[in-house]
Length: 349
Image 1 (cartoon, rainbow, N blue to C red):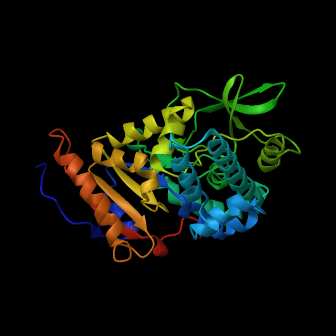
Image 2 (cartoon, rainbow, N blue to C red; image 1 turned 180 degrees about the vertical axis):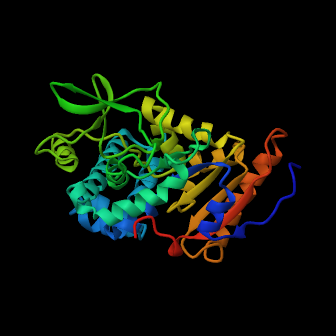
């Protein structure tokens, strides 16, 4: 056994930052990070913004008593895996799958702020301050961590764009000018400080490779995204409903596959620790979370609303899996698990 197994412990966020001053800190952001800034990003709000669905799709949401797009996409993915189903049924399920995915992107675009000007300076400043312990320029080079996000929205991007010289957090998309305008072309060999694990609204696959939209005079990112959606061009995002389906989608994108590789590499850093914020520890993200057990980071600091007492079951379930994976690898160190209350720690205010 790789060291003594210690039950998950409660901790305060500031205490966790102090304890890890000599460690390389990695940060995994989930949907709660964006919801903390804009409650409209919560699933019920997104569902209300999607508009009318066909009768078949509406009945799917009603039957499963959910407003969760990812859950319904998972149901449809399971149906499509039924090899005994007729081609007529499979074609109808594929149509429903595309309708749900299109509704999700449409609603996210609808509730999203129109521009970075909607973000108050003090709001941006607070977010940058939250990120500094992970990727701040005041950190020694050897201790610079990385930010991973599963969010599709632009809030984090806008905060970083207005951070001045306080952060060392590049996304490996290098700007250049061509007939299409200004964009950022992905440089696969670059070492990113920001990784979009599930893509984002401003990431697109094109004939020249994977690009990131940039602001152009009179054409902000959301306007460009809406125009592309109207033309039937969808951003690179992972909207599938199950972990297996997400992993399969990731494997079909060079960028997403590399992004997963960067997370895997971070989790195998024996000098590192992982913080999470706004991540629900859902089985739908098992393809990400299992890398923690396979890795070599010495500790994970889980951000959960209500702290450990309000999330004991989910934390314990994942903890058992991580510990089991560590015990199976004689070279892996033991994993310490802490939980801090996100209700007491806001990245935005």
